[in-house]
Image (cartoon, helix red, strand yellow):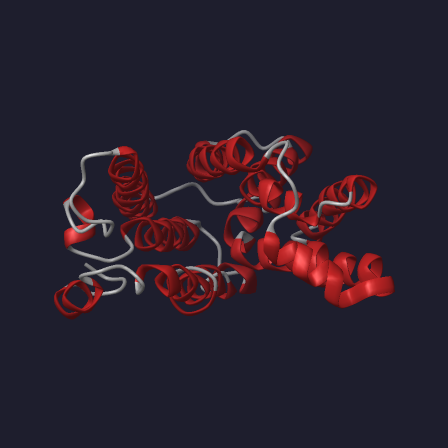
Length: 258
């Protein structure tokens, strides 16, 4: 079984979250499961296939560094709090259909996005490579890992700088415009997109010509589009625009790419 195994694991994973969310009446716990789901799926496939090669260990470690950090961040923020206002609004709008619609439009939809975004890493874990890694493959893996590290730096440092800015009681303005935020209005979102492009380069490094290898480009394309035009930048900037100095900051600082 190939990438279909990843789909089955993701289905079971989100079914667990759906059952718990239905019992406690809090669909926003799905956000806690997002980053962790990539980690769980990748490593389960890894151990099922029992092909313990460095070509599979490297992308799994990179995904784990990203996913576990995100899991901890959201868990710390959302655990033991009431349902997020977005999900609460949907609960009211959906009425008696809240359970089936939550299953399809919250949990299964997020599962679909997880499968699409993680397809490259899942494909690596499900595939047995019969050819040895050549020099060009190793070089591409190193390049992909360096691209990933560049993105990870932007995400981690950007988040850290924002956290320190928010905690600073003596700040003169609400907008964060220093550090990495001087070069892009969303260094953390930019960094996350770059990480997935780095992982795609690692996918390309694999000694295979399978269809899934090249289809995996959909992973960084989708996550970049979502962050830049759907759930990331647009939603956050609705709040940022209310702060003094926004117009000048937006004029001199690009929204995404530094």
